[in-house]
Figure 1 (spheres, one colour):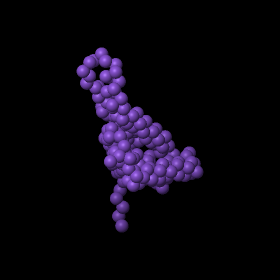
Figure 2 (cartoon, rainbow, N blue to C red):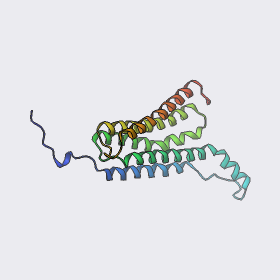
Figure 3 (cartoon, rainbow, N blue to C red):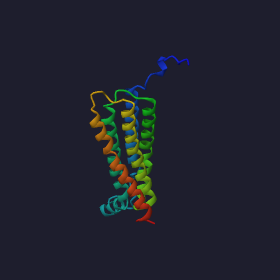
Figure 4 (cartoon, one colour):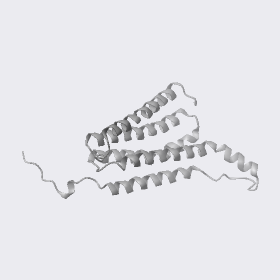
Length: 187
């Protein structure tokens, strides 16, 4: 059987370009979160009470912004710590990264749904996005471990600890999604 000769086009994806893409998507997603925060219309622009009441009325939107900005920050920092220890990116690893980017870009939509407060579907979609990201990170770790993409200086025991650390949040999020399915707080 004849092997296809390797060409310059068969090389791995540039880590630098993927890193720039990741940082850009996260910067945009984190910025989009703030677009849901609207300046309230007031009848009396000088009324502190009216402004306070209008802001309080939109409290869930503010809470969603803070929580979602923190979640995207955790997503980005988690990825950054793992990414720094990868020596190269395979095709499968690239596909997982694209999945992670899709979830990060989708996250502002999920955050905006949270203005509905305890609506169980909004909570399930939000938690589903969190699960999709953490499970993607778990798959990234497993793939990088199997394909030996981690820097040789990274010890196998540290990779195992890292991989196992992502199983607990994934299980917790699934439990919460199931909980909200059977014990809804909203209508």
